[in-house]
Length: 176
Image (cartoon, rainbow, N blue to C red):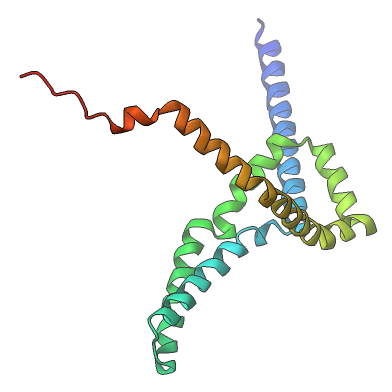
């Protein structure tokens, strides 16, 4: 290859790599925008709430006097700081951006952003947590009707796997 051709090829590759980096940065920026619209930073809020509730329950179980409530709150704050180190948004965000950029094209992310900014998208954001919770409650209620039958089937299978006479028979002696 001639020196000029090599130089032109190198210049082309540099320009191309710049475009790839720009595309990757744009893709990541769209993922971040979508995650913000989807309130992904609130993803771990239930965990924080559960941990806070655990401390409150332990406080109540210990029958601690109200004068010790500040102590409980201090420990809750320490637990929150510990959670922040593990699952704070600043820890999750880079991995979430990677997940979304590997799962959705840039165009798909732009489409999702447009949807979440639309009136219907906003309604979905507001309504889906309640709809999902109610759906889970309905499924749980229906499931409860099957639990006795499933438990009976488990018992029946166990009886067939381990016959009654095998349970009563002593274990064979080991030879020395």
